[in-house]
Image 1 (spheres, rainbow, N blue to C red):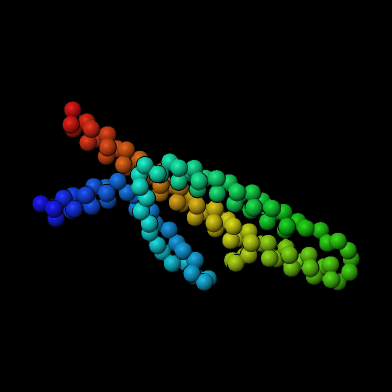
Image 2 (tube, one colour):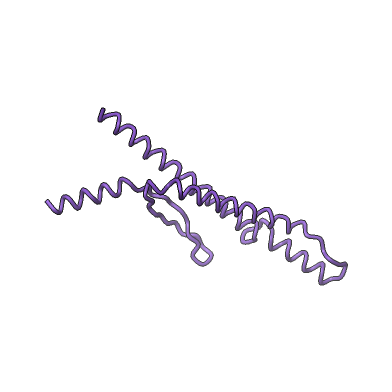
Length: 133
């Protein structure tokens, strides 16, 4: 019986976890990855992700402001520096605004997955409770 008790515990533990899919940057390329989350921890994780997304959105606004940077002088060095900063802060792939916007998009995706998993678990829980009555 000990074997089946262990199987039962493993199945029960898996039933209380949500699988979340994401991407991990591994030196310039994104690779897909997944992780499981305890259902009871989802609300706190959603709140943390939403806080992180808000911070990244503020960073994105600051990065976009760099695109409006005015050169401090009329000399060639000021002109080149200003143009370089604007380009680095831009929306082209690999630039600051692009990278931060991509991070915001990925966090939003994670939040949506967590909320969907939470809804699915609650629906399954409610259906199971209704059948027991």
